[in-house]
Amino acid sequence: MRHTLPIAPQFYVTAPQPCPYLDGRSERKLFTALQGENAERLNDTLSKQGFRRSQNVLYRPSCAECTACLSARIRVADFTPSKSQRRTLRRNAGLRRVATSPWATETQYDLFRRYLDSRHADGGMADMDIFEFAAMIEETPVKSRVVEYTAASDQGDARRSLVAVCLTDVLDDGLSMVYSFYDPDRAGDSLGTYIILDHVAIARRAGLPYVYLGYWVPGSRKMGYKSNFAALEIYKGGRWQDIGDPADHTAETHPLSVDPIAEQVARIALPEARPVKG
View 1 (tube, rainbow, N blue to C red):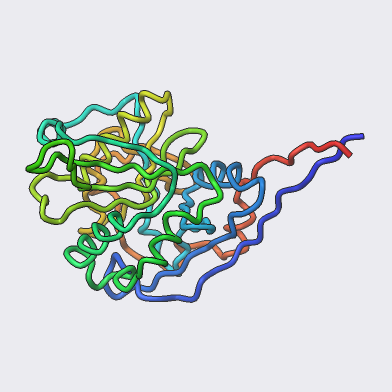
View 2: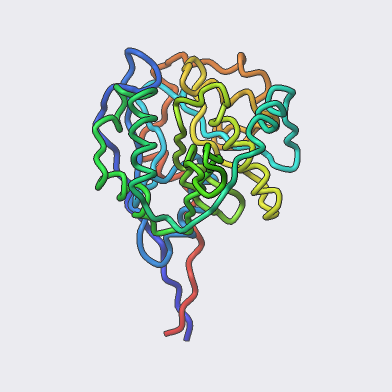
């Protein structure tokens, strides 16, 4: 006899807190736990609906009166780098990439701290210690990789230095860039852009159609760079669509722009029931 085991995660909403992207607004997230043998299927399914992973949690914005945060992904097959992006690829041609299991190191943490202190000293991660950093990297119930980029030092290849890191999830339809950081002293090398371009190359080689970039927020300088990538799609109105002209998307608020939480949850598509023998 065969039965089906339903996958029914419970969804919750965080309390409002200051928005990290747009001044004067409050942020609220809809989230669910990511655990158990069905974690990868849940991550794959919800990522296609605008969710992101943070350790053992999947979340997406659910702010009152605001729908500015839009999940973004690059269509790998249609992507062509711009002139400035080609220059970035040439500038960083000497970097070496190594993809490893999600394991945190002191070298990674030292680079992470320098990155935060230089670029996000007042951000939500500013006080993260090495144990919290290790949890961010290692607490993953899905297929994840740490992608490290090293550069030759004055002593040559024998003493290469770590210049960039990206924690990456491998989805059934693409790569999800969970979090990346890089050497702030190499600001002129556009390492953030290079990491994205390299992930497009990795996805293309692996036959994966998308690279998920997280959230694009019109009106936010922190997130504006994502609209510089060709073949960019955003998740808006319950479907993926080409971004078109970024100027057509605004961060304006409206009291009826956000559906009630119960309606949002009711529209979330979950993985199909898994047949089991009984």
